[in-house]
Image 1 (cartoon, rainbow, N blue to C red):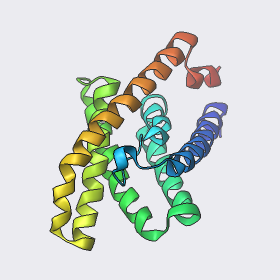
Image 2 (image 1 turned 90 degrees about the horizontal axis):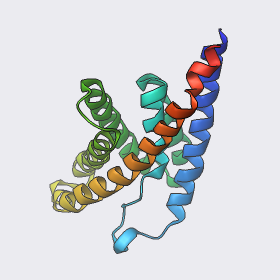
Image 3 (image 1 turned 45 degrees about the vertical axis):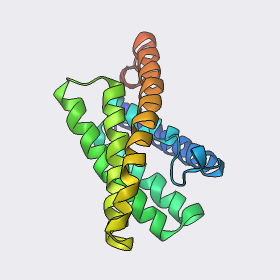
Image 4 (image 1 turned 60 degrees about the horizontal axis):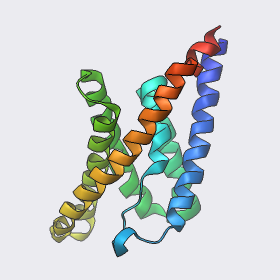
Length: 173
């Protein structure tokens, strides 16, 4: 294995650890505006960064690893299933939009936030029934706001990385 691959895997491992910690801290926060299930989504910043500087496969692996670890450590099986459904749809949408080259980092993140919530509502409607769809407009707004915040922060981090030289490119030297 060459130095670049080792560096990329180490970076993915560190990102996963950061996601796990941020996710735990977010789980301790009270519900935003007293609405259950709405979180800032800052644990997704490393996933966004990975989509842009590593690749989508590592980003997906990081996300799934964090969800499984969090599920077994904090939230349980059902929350894990909801999160996995949201992550699959979110990462798929973000990768497709990024590849078009027509969307900013913030735009990609917003779409990912809304897609994540859609994935969760789809699973919830299977588990608890179609009445859960009444909650979806609230989750769309939450996905827009959280996606925008996450996207802005990710965009700033990516600009700093680009200005200072990509950590991936540095590892290849």
